[in-house]
Length: 368
Image 1 (cartoon, one colour):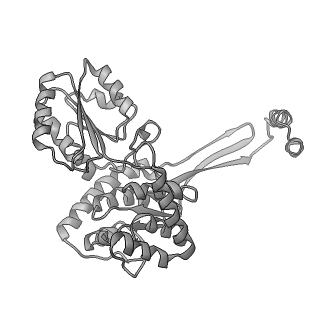
Image 2 (cartoon, one colour):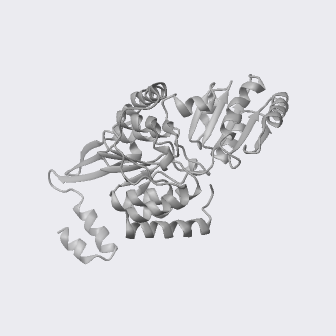
Image 3 (cartoon, one colour):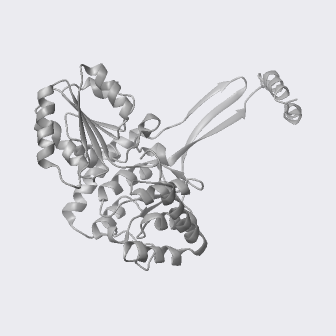
């Protein structure tokens, strides 16, 4: 998603302004109009229930994610320099809204675990009415979610921002959800603007059927998704094109194949695309040389990473992997800097000189 259509942003702004002004009544009106239904309660309490096998599978994925993400929680730093004790402390935001498209309890896991690990006090799950399934409510309970907001789209996020007082909104969703995050970023933090699914596959030394499994899976996300297959093996690429032609449906996105001379050319092409997903088959070094990518699956299909490998599947899209990465506890935390005088301030002369140069006499006076 390289940019949001202006007409979509304008329509979303009207919804957000209305919900900000009229609250729950407006949010429920839009829910009935756009989703065809609305639950009268704006907050559902997480509770046990649903298919126990589905819930257990989601909680196994959550455990895999949490054991790794605990190691990613930043601890801060402190030192002493020039008479000043300098400290950076990481603190979680107080509350967050996690957007979960209907029935995607795997996305609930991939967002709630890093938020919980960061120490967020109030975690709200925003989902369309049909998304508030017994399974989702059960998983939400085990993951420490405060409440589920069964109002989807821009209206649900606007309700969370203006009437629940959340500090960060994160999660995937369609065009109107991402436009809502864009508009609401004036008021709260967001993880990013997420677009259609993207995949690049580098395949060497494997058969085309293996290389194409992840391609077909990711293109299953819809016609706006896309995939690139890179290989130094021309025969593998021809066979992959045959498999794609045989399996393609009208709801799948396009596949482009690229014959590359070597790993250097492959890495350059991957960095140019800056994809959400990268699969590497046969040459693991490619995974560690790429700079611009969301997450990499090495010698396994990307859906395994999406569900159970223990890395969040909420990833940067639309080329934004050039400047941001995967969801981690950092997404829900902020660094706070503290400078404490702990002796003679040895850089006063430098501070005064800079204040004088920049034309701030009261700054200079304060530093006498």
